Amino acid sequence: MPEIKLTQDEIRYMSLFQEVTKVTAKDCVVDEENNRIIFLVDPHFMGLAIGKNGMNVKKLKKVLGKDIEIVAYSDNLEDMVKNLMSPARVRSVKVVDNDSKKTVYITVDPQDKGIAIGKSGKNVVRAKLILKRYMDIDSVVIV
Image 1 (tube, rainbow, N blue to C red):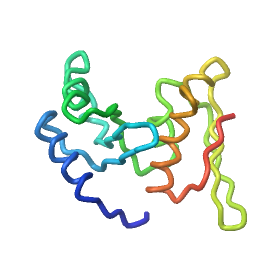
Image 2: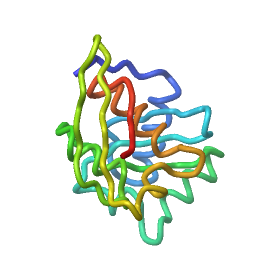
Image 3: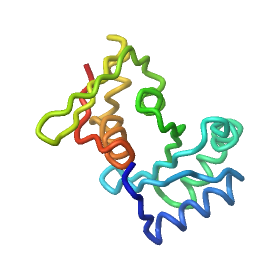
């Protein structure tokens, strides 16, 4: 696992996240391109982090002025991919390693392909950001 260094902004966001949700975020990824902040939390605390009817997500979005996404963290690649692609149903995860570049091929249920990719590919971007950070994956392909 690569060493992760948090910026001052990320530390501030994580502190605010904890204040609002009472859940400690494992990590925070700022995606400027899609104007969002992605928080990774322990899967056991997902419900608490999101809050009743998404109350915590709405509160954070209002305070930070960015979209907020919460993903359940796992150090197992397959579980992490399933969490990142949710609610799309993942059928298989395959890593291909060639010329020092790692590509993950994610096979999803055919009717879930649009959900997995997301509007303008933003779910693929999210998966790529997080998988690069934790699993050293260079690209993500939805099959």
